Image (cartoon, rainbow, N blue to C red; front, side, top):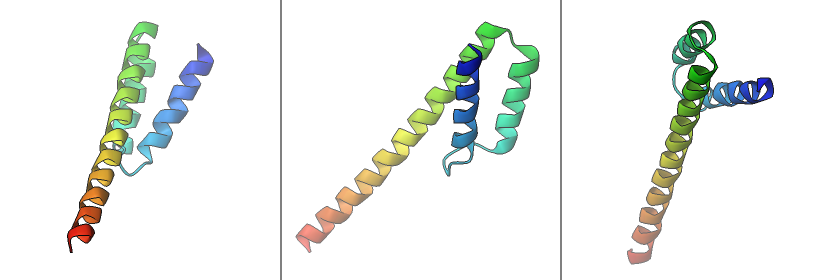
Length: 79
């Protein structure tokens, strides 16, 4: 379980430094809350939610980039 927590913590740190990540203050507040006020079930729930949000945000960014590239390709095709 400790390894899983460490992996999730590293993932959250890397996502927070990503351009689509949340502010460092948000992650600091979340980690302080999780480590001081939550039991293991609460910690698991918070980390799972953060990972899901980060993945959805990343997928959204990728899809937006693909839409833009497709629109550019279509524009070039008809020009």
